[in-house]
Image 1 (tube, rainbow, N blue to C red):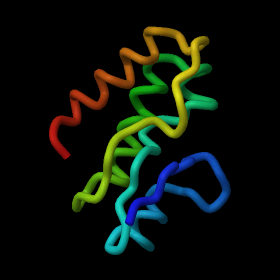
Image 2: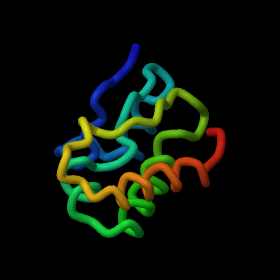
Image 3: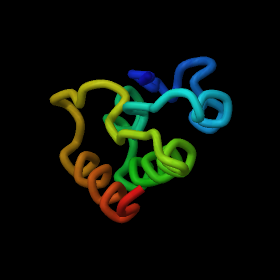
Image 4: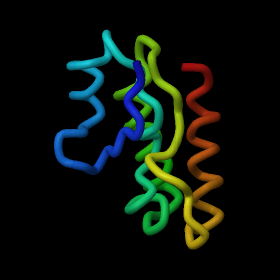
Length: 94
């Protein structure tokens, strides 16, 4: 079973709590970066930190597929998309 989307800014969707409470029973698809706040409006450094924080919460032990919360919209700064990708690549295999 899979939970998608993992809307990390919605009430009750805190990544670490989701992993703790449901990580043995389901996989998480998405939640890699907040596409409504951080990705379109943050700095590249904030994007990298968001990705790292969400990976740290959701990836340990498996059962996680990195993806954004929702679609990446046209107004997202290209440097933020690159920052998201770079942070994922820096994390390596998870």
